[in-house]
Figure 1 (cartoon, rainbow, N blue to C red):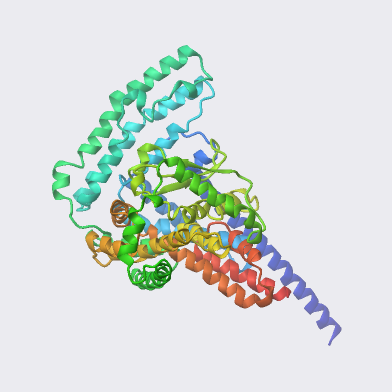
Figure 2 (cartoon, one colour):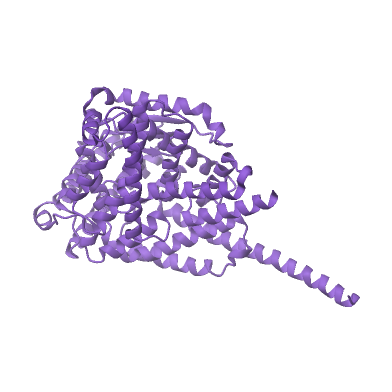
Length: 585
C-alpha cells in the first residue's frame, strides 16, 4: 500500500475514533442534563419522594387541570430535547436512562388528554393518603417547624376544595363514580373526620419534645381550631357532594368503557401499566390461558388431598376451616415472619447482592384497613429506616393464612424489599432512577419472587403450596376481569362470578377487588402477572443463549441492575448483557 495512503487511513481512523468519543461524551452530558431536569421536576412535585428524602414540604398536591396541561407541555419539550441525542453512542446505563425518560415523557404528554377520566377520591389513587402522611410523619425540631406545619395545615381546606371542584366538573362531563364505589369512597373520606384531638392532623405531645410546654400548648390549640373550623367542614362538604343528585345519577355499571373516551383511556392504561405495546384483547387472551394453566396445577393438588374434581367443595373447606384463619393479628404477623426466616439462609444461592436496609412486618393503620384488601409495602424513608410490610389485620375471619408465605415472599424477601433496597442503595444509578417505580417491573418482580421460593422448596406444607398457586391464580384472574370490566363491558357480577370460580378469596375481598380494577385503579392489576412472565421469558432466553455458562445469580444481577424500568427497557438491557457475556466466552 502507498505509504502516504496508509498514513492517511491511520489518521482518518484516529479522527473517527476521536469523533466517536466526543459524540458519546456530548450525548452523555446532554442526557445527564435532561435527567437532572426531570429529577428536579419530580423532587418539586412528588410528596412521597420528598418524604423519603426528608425534604421540607411547603405545598400539597396540585391536582388541577392547568397543572396537568403544564406537565404535558414540559414533557413534550423534554422529549424533543431527548430525541436530539444519538442513542447508539450511549453506554448500557445511559441507554437504560434514555429509555426510561422516553417512556416517561411520552406517557405524561399523552396522558394529559385523559385528565377528566381520573378520579381523585378513590382509596388507591387519591392524593389524600399521601397528603395525610405529610402531616403524620412531620418532624419537629423547633419553633420554626410549628409555624411551617400550621402554614401547610391551613392549605388543606383549599386542597379538599379543589378535589370537590374536580368531582363536580367530572359529573358535568357525564363522568361519575359508579354507585357501588360511592359507598366505599364515602367510608374512606369519613374515616378522616375526627374530633380535633383524635384527628390524624393533630400533633401529640410526644412529637413536640423539642419545644417548650407553652409553645406546645398554644400550637395544639391552633391546630385543633384549624381542624375543627376549617378542615372537618370541608371534609363533610366533599362527602355530601357524593349524595343527592350525584348519587341519583351515578351509573349502576362499572368500567371505563362507559365514559366518553373511556375505551381509548383504557388502551393507554394497558400500555402504561404493562410498559409493553399490548392491547386489551391480547392481555385478555393471555389471562384466559394462564388461568387455565394454573387451574390445572391446582387440580393436581386437590386430587392429592382427596378432592379430585371437587373444586367448590375444596374451596369451601379452605374458606371455612378454622385452621386456615388467624385468631389474632399477631398470629398473622408470626406466620409471615416464620416464612421469611426460612428463606433468609437460602438467598445466597440465588443472589450475589442483598440490600443492607433492615425490614419489618407491622399492621396497617385502622383508617386504611377498610379500603385495602391485603396490605402494602413501604420502602425505607428518612423517618423510618426499615422497609415495612403493613398487613391488614382487620376482619380476621376473612383473612386466610393459606397464602401468607407467598404474600410475604412477594412483599419482602426476595420480593419488593430486596429489589427496592438494591435500587435505592445503588449509587451508580442516576438519582431519579434510584427512586423510580414501574409496576410491571416491581410487581412483576414480586410475583417472580414467589416462584423462586417454590424453586427453593420453601412451600413444604401442601396447603402453603396451594396458597402459592392460589395467589398466582389471583394475579392471573386479574388479566381477565380487569380487561373484561373496563374494555369488554363485563358487569361487576360477571367478573365476581369468574373470580369465585377460580379463587379462594372471600366475597368481601372479591367485592373490594372488583371495584379496585373497574373504578379505582384500572389497568394497574395487569402489571403483576405480565411482569412475572417477562422475567421468566428473559431468564429462558438467557439460559438458552448462555448454555452451560448460565448462572442464575448472574441473571438476577442483570435484571436487578437497571432497577425499576419499563419492561421494554429491561429487555434491551438484558439482551446487551447476554451479547457481551456470550462474546467473553
